[in-house]
Image (cartoon, rainbow, N blue to C red; front, top):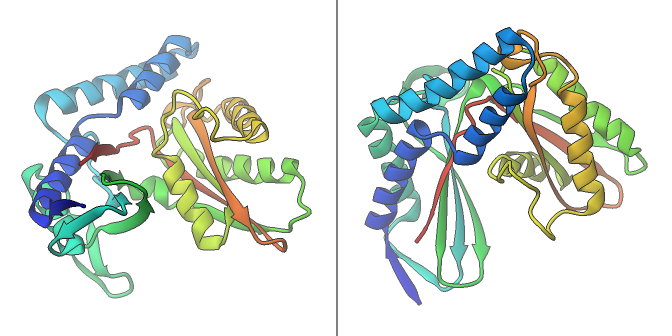
Length: 281
């Protein structure tokens, strides 16, 4: 049995909050650089160059990549042979607060969604998955709401053709248009229940943009990702919505078994500043 203290979790989460908001993921940066290399529209190329330079400046100057430092989403893969010494939820939220204060990040969270009121740093959204072994993987995803607001869910009939699902995902990107700061990373969740499909779509954003994980995705899902990537980039929305070849950097799809009577599909879009950071304890 491995024992991890709440204090260690707090400090780790604080560090992850800082890193996620200051250092753009390597796979996202690589995708942006490839898009810049392949972009033929001069204005789009200039915008991509500015995005890449902004990421470099953020890391060097220790300033947030984007002024919207998002709603902190914390994902845990908790080994069944791990014992947490202390209050886990409290440790995570204290870590988020510590990290956001250290980074002088914007406090964007309101405690009452209807009354609204004064904003703060907490609470974070916490998702826990149990896993075998004695390790704890922590991931922080600061999700900005310019793109979160473009989330879509549709409960399809089980007889729905793949062409209808593809059209729904494509239309979700069309609806987002320039509003969510393209080029996008498009996360898609298919299966489960309504709420679980939405979670799958968000988890899809955590997956590397470089390649589909070997053995994890069925051939038809990989094909759907590739087809959608091509179709979305033909929309000519382009970087920051001003036209060009690069409307999305990747399409990541996660699936899960579902009920015989349903077919939930969720789309969760990320802006070009897809930020997350992970560590294994």
